[in-house]
Length: 485
Image (cartoon, rainbow, N blue to C red; front, side):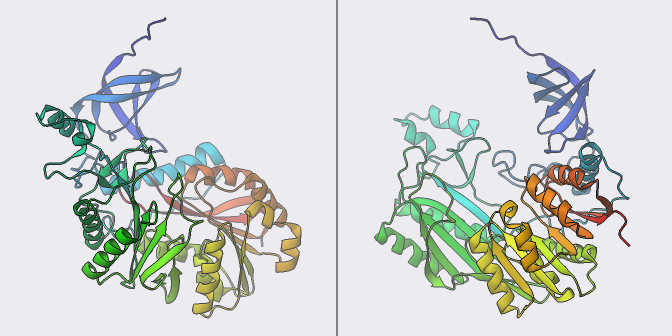
């Protein structure tokens, strides 16, 4: 058997940039080195883990010099849970590199002329800004190497299960999956993404289940009662908690729900789901209402949006309002247009712009989201919207356009993968005079714009930061038909 060649250790590598997926970039001779945990301005030694002709990947073994762009991470779970990976990067510099990500994607991928990019709009809040988090139960909590070594050193460790027991004798975790490890969950004590009340509810659910010895889920063996918890908040003060169980153990379920309802009267919607499947998705499962309403409400610019347990809604609601205002501005509606809102979700953008045009037609893949969109229009007395569920590339055809009208403006807000090539081609055939493209992925957005470029030019670009302490950036781009008056 051929012995694997050991890759070299590179010394004094200068970190010079950040790539599109948030990894730092170092340069060493003619190589570009991708490395996690560094920021531009750092100088470090890097042990290569993978090497190609033009680039390599590696891990930091020693810092020679720390960058002035660095700040101290504020979360006790930083570096383990996998979220908020940019906590060590000053927020001003986070914004700089997010804007640069948009510019680089347009230059490298779209390869089209574009105007000056507007300065990125920062998030008003950089902590506690999310209105939805989902936590996972596991019967074996993730241990740091230090904790693992301590557990091994104990004389009373008889078998593996005891390795996953903390100082108080508790086993099991409720938190986030360790990146890249589907069966490992980090127990979260305090998360800075959602309100303190969210932390209290999660910890109380976990502690009660441990006290009552409710079995935490084992994803490999597919056993255990406790599976997931979803917490949703809103700017109207309403609060939804969804507890997901693996099987219908009625007595234990009743005990937990009664306890949480009594302990947290702030909960306005307490729901539960039985999920016996091998995966954590629940869009196809029945939701049972234990206490309060089946939904919560979000208010945006005078419009009320119904948010159910399966509904998509922008997780940073304050920034969503900013995002939709720019979208409306770029659409430049005069009141006579038919607008198509593609990937409409729960109709947030459609209802937001409806008062400024003749009609909005929203299309979305998820049937439940379309039902919410219709209800949102009804409760807001918006009478000029129509919503349809189905695969975008199948729905958006000639018969559909003939039936519902030619769109002068198309607003599109696709998932990270961007638009299907057939959808892009259909938009080119329709030839709306304006396209407003909202995206959470500058790379797929730039790819789609390259396909639209023969007929459309970019006339405005606005990045928006929706997710502080991550590399993710939202961007709104306005495209206009060549030759448009």
